[in-house]
Image (cartoon, rainbow, N blue to C red; front, top):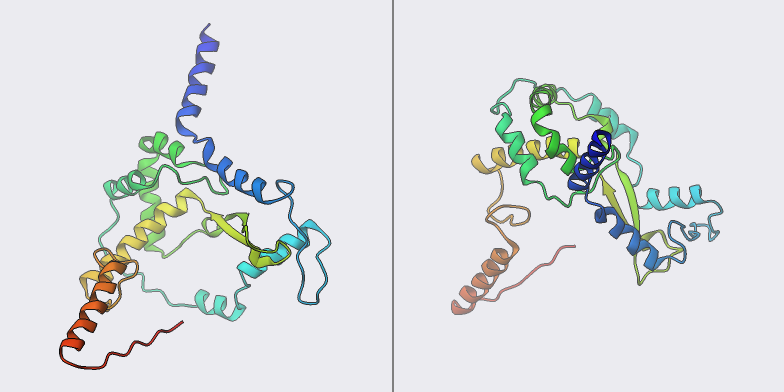
Length: 239
């Protein structure tokens, strides 16, 4: 009886922290758009030939969406002289906890297969270690390579020819651990840029309190003011 109670308790725990339908939704989309779920159509190369193997097809699609980075750029990044003198306030336990709490519960597991639900359940046990580890990484300007690796899911587009690599929309699933540190870094960058007025007042994208609706209102106000002043208004669109 005790053994069965333990098994039932563990099953209930897993059911409470794992969102079963999150990844299933991706596979349903793939299944509805491909003849056989999990298979890829042959991709046409620049030479006009078609790929012959699954590995060749997958490599061609990934290289199309994720072009290889110039090795010179990587070398320059590695040779940067980082200023490790800490100027921002140190990360706090409450800040990390708030980041974890604010994450959407629908975040999908990355390559390490850890879900946000599991991390939230064990957070009180790992809080001190995660806190010290985050401080160490930020002080040394290190973002672990394993957190830069993504699990890629290819979603076929309905209106595209599946022999074209652009017919697939890649969804990249990253580690939750990396997302936590990434969010902490993002918050510090935003704080630095906003509090020191390092962003143009004309930048509206990806800024709190600067929506695209406000940008449109500013353009309309400018046009109306120009018309009242009997001036000619010219708009230049850049792509």
